[in-house]
Length: 472
Image 1: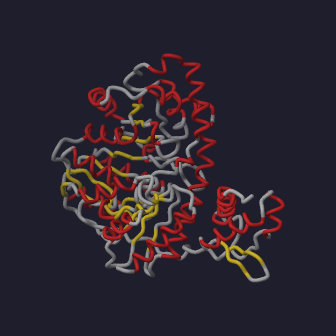
Image 2 (image 1 turned 180 degrees about the horizontal axis):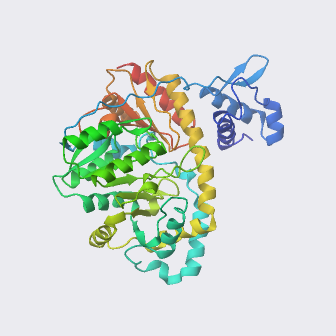
Image 3 (image 1 turned 45 degrees about the vertical axis):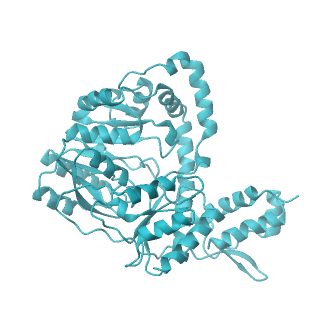
């Protein structure tokens, strides 16, 4: 009986992670088909399928009468995308229905998921969530299904506060407001510190959903370039000197779409600069728990002394987006945010809050996230290698140290929006760069999602994208 395709894909995934993590080094011989077959209890045909899949992804190569060897890693020599040019002029955020359609279609399960910034459903800890749900049902009973206090469940807020004990100024439970995802947290923060017509400084490129929120509030934006180390602080100072800016909105830790990571010294400099000017910083830290290696980076909020940093996050990128459990530490704006929360959604659902609290208390959350980090790191490296292998010469790709997004700069003259339209007609979802700026920048850029294990379907889609990109 033939082995299930799942078994060879599982073996390929495991070996691919060893290659991409460096534990199997370039040039090393991998175990023979016969040895792997005996050790794993798999048929030789299944092992060959796994090795051929790795070969198609550029991770191993076969040598006649010798076996399979780890390839020289592709993608390591790719240049990173260039930063945008600074602009000190504030502009309103416009609406582009064509691009909205592209985004809406990119979450269609029939479309190859290189567009929407979600991790694969199979990377959701469903067993742990189910166990936590049963424990909560037993311990909380009917209390899990009634309205929670407006500020959020106290057990969750206490556990969130405990996670800040390593900061120079740790938070308390009373400083935290639970929200319905990070999107609501960002919306409440913007409303708390601005009024229609005000100007907000944002990253360029910046997350399109945040730009849509800014648009809905009648605000203008001034774009600040982002490089591999995050927001350009010299450009920010110039913009702040040129006009009145009511708030700065940034993602210092693994931003969307660039996945840039601001070093601690630059985070501290950012906080001090804005504190001296009495300008609030709205910090989106939604990817903060997903470094590919090392300790979790501290948010800019860790250096806040004046209560001017409004820290937002959620469990959507780690546990599951459907939980809709987010939170905000609003500093001196905490009471204003709490009042706005009452007027907008009153309170967050009780049951998901208690489930997340259970996972934090038991340690299951941290165990799962440690595993998830390694998987996402391998997927990012493998997708980057596929882009290097198939995309046109001159392509530049970001080098993420966390999260699961790639920011790709195509050769000059490539119309990324046209590429996205063609890809969608072929059943492949990607996001064109134009969506990440209100100024129609980044016409030759695309964002790719590495949140799904790299299987034959995704590898084939990347190869097609490379062919179409060469036909510009």
